Image (cartoon, rainbow over all chains, first blue to last red):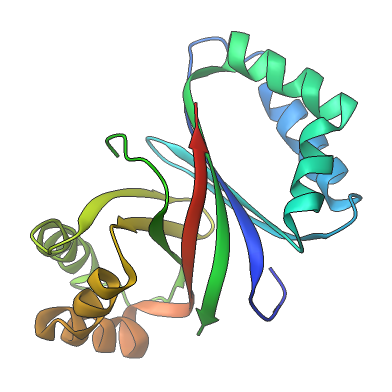
Length: 100
Length: 100
């Protein structure tokens, strides 16, 4: 993501996939685009190997809360939990320091 | 990683690789093993696609500081910066909340 000065916030989302992946890639792309339109969205890092890790960065906890309550996002989450993910974990973090 | 109750700490390390990868995989594995022996180490999540993301979890900022000052780790970091990584970023975070 582009450079931001801490403090800001990070949501760490780690997942393992189930054997039902129909529609997953399309939805993941759609949610990434939708997140980018949200107030306070700062950026996203994503990689998948044995597990998937998606980290989204936010200006405030309020911005995270708004995104969590977004209607389309809620539908996608329900599908993820019931269909695409074998397991998942979400962590809400405060970024204290960042350096290259 | 195994279940821990927040607050605890996370180090988010994102990288892109250079075209010089000799010795990288071995060193990454060695550093993962060494981290596991450090006091306050709680776990690690790792995935690589276009970018690599490694998140290590720690009981305290002091534990992170000790790991950063570890001599073998310092040598590995110097090699990473000069040889293996085209770019990298490190973020120190406080995990406020975690849920499944």
